[in-house]
Image (cartoon, rainbow, N blue to C red; front, top):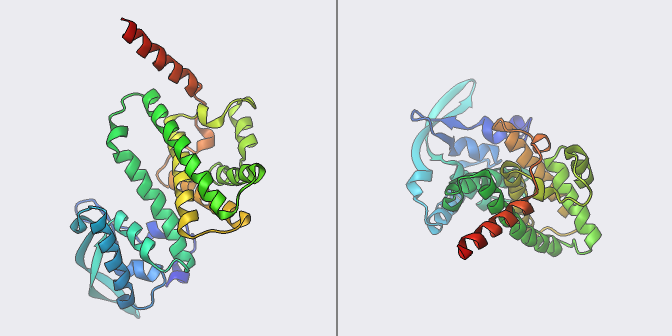
Length: 283
């Protein structure tokens, strides 16, 4: 089933997504098990049970993400049969691929895909982010997040064998190339009209910063989860995650990061805010 469906491996999970009568997206567990290359559904049930346990441990309401329902399943010669199944939310799918057999290529792809999608929803739903009213505030928030997660990404890359400064620069370029349609840091500078001394991240708007934050956080998680070893494999992982984030932006109709406008230096915003604070204190 998996080999029959996967003509575009970046869209397979969207291909089997369904919409219920209330307009909510969901995935049928039986179809999902076939895509993940589980021959017998009963062997997939154990994966669902582990995912449900992880859902409980995360403090989420299990019923919101795992709901019993009947699913139409093809049984050959064009015939179908209604069988007991589980209606899965996007978060449920994320937990399932985290608990499935990661040795399977399609499971590894699913881990990246649903991690990116879930992280997107998490950031959008973050109270701290929602309370930010202006573009400047969002940029400052995301830039701080980016700085912190770049440190964690560097640590994860070091654990994979990316130790020397030159090797880390190459590793970072692979992430950019995946996200920016083949452009490395120098290419992005040229495309954006930035000077060599100007840092790319300091001139990104909130949308572009968010995309790069997804790239960094998901690469870090994937390197650790798969216990990646070797510079070549680490570079490949960073490229693949960047490319997956790009594919997600495309699917939701977003502007590609290389086409987003260049923003004023974020350092100016930070200095302006500090000056404003000092002025209030003196007053």
